[in-house]
Image (tube, rainbow, N blue to C red):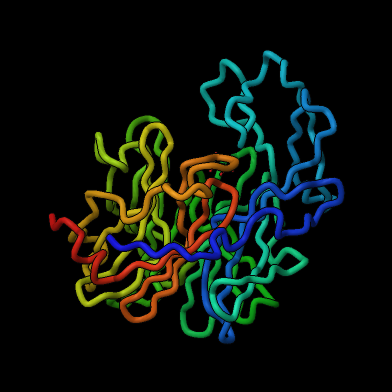
Length: 353
Ligand code: MAN
């Protein structure tokens, strides 16, 4: 697989983004949703900010209060035996079988614009900021699907009651409408197809079942983009392979002559995140035709291997021009990068089922 990583990588790093909150630092500008608007490439960045800690023995957790529209900051002592701080992204309660209790940063979405797709200028203000009870720990990992003249933006909404997926629409990246939560917790990595297929909208989604089952890819249909049903299992983990630990959709699926191509992420059990591809039937996207046995992109460049959470390449959006797919992707939960790949080479690399 020929992978052309831009010389300018990383295209956007935390140091390029001014914190929005006083007394905070930007620790991530990553996992951006991508689209084109008015002859510009738009990266809708997940910006993660955390309160600056003067004391290295203290970890802080920022939480949005929808009543006051302000952030509140909770403080924890690193040597507090009640908590586990081993994952830099989260604070866990020791002895609890639950996932995390708090996040160590708060994410929101900010627009970066570019004429050439390589050098980006970031807006000063957030475009989508936590706005309700289901977003108090932040909003993350947006994807953007353009349907007719409307851009649908959907993202992980994180709060004490779980991580679900919420939907916002805009026509101009100025005015926007919040359409509520479309997939209840735990669900992430939703990808809405850019057109109706046989009269229905489709979305890939990634629930995290608990009694049994795994974090794997599902597909649902809708007539209005807000209410989703007729859920079907789509694609699962594979033991001993690059996608053995967890997986989920990545970029918005796009049409090729062979089928819908979905660039998805898969992680090994030790959290090494790679990108691969799955081909879905053009007329019935619930049918899997072919899949990557090997990743199409894996963390190799220094900026992919090292960072806040290293060994991660994680795409939330691509721009497709003829045979060229410009895959934008978050690196190491820190920055943004882009690589060009050939659609034909990806198709040729797939194993048919
Ligand atoms: C995981 C990671 C984090 C993220 C939380 C909540 O721990 O993806 O980056 O903040 O989930 O979504």
